[in-house]
Length: 373
Image (cartoon, rainbow, N blue to C red; front, side, top):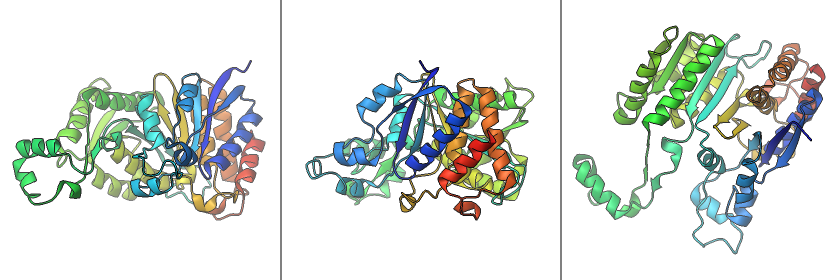
């Protein structure tokens, strides 16, 4: 019997390619696991009107951790148009399976390390070591949205915010869409504490909370106020505060000043992609969705439909996501070997995928990393 049971969810497009590549590396390391396939993604939306079938939820309730490749996602009208004939027009509404996954299992912490490996021609600056903590289940991505605007919601908003709503007099409910940004004190405290604990464990000197409390006063304000309280428990680590727009500027100007960043869902999504580009782009951007029951590890890139079947994309983000999974499972020696192999391949410079200016295929890159293990 294998030591671990791992959920295996390739998803759509190049998710399949990078997952297959990662399996090459894990097998070379001798990772003792049974991999259990999980259906997720666009094909299951088209045929079942459910991109995250219940059978996959059941599977994830019985694994030690999971790896996930990528998904295709389209706006509401386009998603409706791609349903099978018998499902089209039946009121089905597409919902992102990865967002639902995060909420179903309360994967409240999203961790995205962004490290500049020596020899990577895409590094903005060598030596960068940034880590983004993103609150993963609340905020704008929680899916509490309205279109058209229900009349009872409009009446309540008119009662509580008459000046703002008066600007919409004469605008039909059908012409108004609302997305809510809901924070809880517990959600704010949880993600900030995770960021400080990580900084303490790995020797970072500061944690920067990235919000916009001067404009988005109630939600961002709650995050900042809770961060200040938690910072008092970590006297050796400075709390820095910055607005999301300014943070983007400072990261381009002097990213070496920062270490651990923490933000709400959408702001964290934005700033983590920026950090990823500083260290080579999404081909190097790994991430983990961490909950108490299960954790799901994935690259930050999408399904890249234009590269499907070409064996072309960079698998390092997925391979490093597997490294995060090994750390999570306590297999630190194996995780360190994997990262050292990635570092060696990048430093050597012989294997470079198209994004790095080379012609190495997805499979060849995985084989190069495996050889260094």
